[in-house]
Image (cartoon, rainbow, N blue to C red; front, side, top):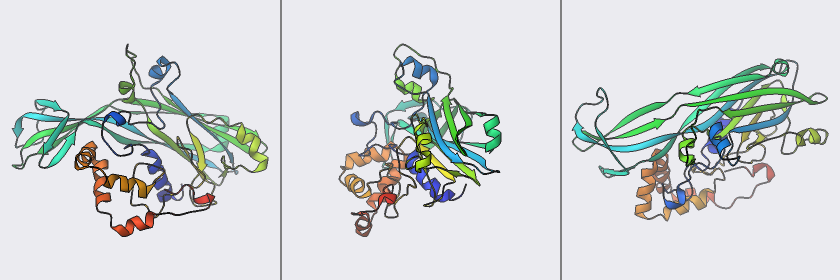
Length: 353
């Protein structure tokens, strides 16, 4: 795929949309539901909810292939990581050790002026699918299964005497999914690409049927990128007149595809749970990721500056991303805020964040 740096900037912004909900607090009363966008739950759980939660996501879009057009697809999402802070019953000089130390789980720990909090993090997942030629895919739809195994790590926390007195335990669950790709003719010379993502993670439905357990096996903030060689995608946001009927017949469920890359290029699409215009951008005036794809940089940055000391401690304790965000905003010079303020662009720049 071309313009990988530009595409990666945009897709990363989409990936972390809502990761830390405004106004950037930890697991407070108003911020218990952290994962809001593009969640694909295990099928058994979703079906037990009677259709209120989705176990699949479907993208359909139009393309004009050439004689040698090939397709490449990437699926990106976050997977929940349980983060538990625990004290060691006996401080240790040596680390690592064989086996697990005796641990006492705590909600929050203050150590060397730093606050650590048990909550949730996320790890990035990416699935790459080489689909071959469009003609071959038309003849034989492709199914690609993927999985990520259960994983557990311990990060040591040391006191001022360099003894390991606590650990951060990070635990991710087993996850299995499937990507189904197919191509069909949608009119003279135009084809419809379908990408169906399914969550096949085993899940035992229990009486309370609450979502926290199901989230551990869910795909979060799911989005996909598809790239063509020697062919072009048709804008789904503003299709040419001759393709409007075919575009209207496409079925996009939980996601929406837009052209991405340099303005005017048509070889790559981004399909995301957040509705964007074609050719989204991250504004040059931004001071870095704010975990809000609308990127209202000035308002959000100023809001962080109004947080109390206790709220900032809670934000630092949320996770490393929140801590880095706070440090970056606290260090912003006044000149940076002036560059964020009040900018009007034409429609092609409305996606700037």
